[in-house]
Image 1 (tube, helix red, strand yellow):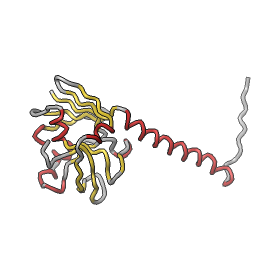
Image 2 (cartoon, rainbow, N blue to C red; image 1 turned 90 degrees about the horizontal axis):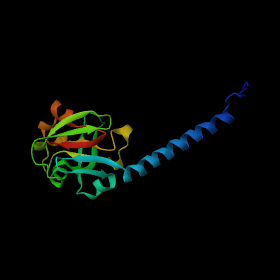
Image 3 (spheres, rainbow, N blue to C red; image 1 turned 135 degrees about the vertical axis):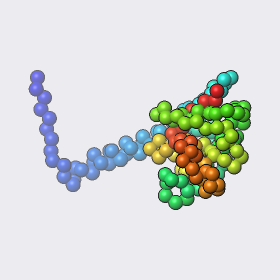
Image 4 (tube, rainbow, N blue to C red; image 1 turned 90 degrees about the vertical axis):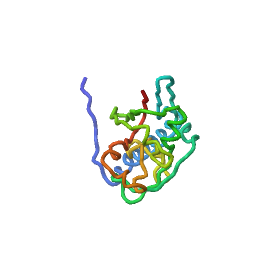
Amino acid sequence: MNTIFRTRPITSATAHVPMFAVAAFASLMTIAQAAADHGDTVLTVATPSIKAELTLEALMQMPQTTFTTSTIWTEGEVTFVGVSLYDLFAAYEITEGDVSAIAINDYKVTVPVTDATEDGPIVAYTMNGEEMQRRDKGPLWVVYPYDSKSSYQTETIYSRSIWQLNRLDSQ
């Protein structure tokens, strides 16, 4: 059996319908993704004795750290909000050694526990007041307050600034 598809040319009268449908679908997907991120695990913290699966909401319930800094990946100064690595490591009794920070795509960097100081890096979940989406380095990004110390403006520190973070492994 042959199937014949009839098409008609796209005109200004018909072009807006498909574009509207595409725009509406994209908006709904963004809203659905944001809603899912609040209830889904966004960060797994694993140590030899525990494995904690944290939702975005759980991270937001932890003490918040806010700072404004410029980055080599963004334009101008950006305000980040998140959980300090200091508080996160303390909550899970990570006190020495190195931590593997792993992204959604399995990219991995090593962060020394000594980087986790009270005025040091955070696991950011908002940038300029908005939750970060995957396409914009989210939902989680390890960010250092680069402008606060020249020692944070090195290739080593930039390499530890992993985005799309979803796992911290301490051995």
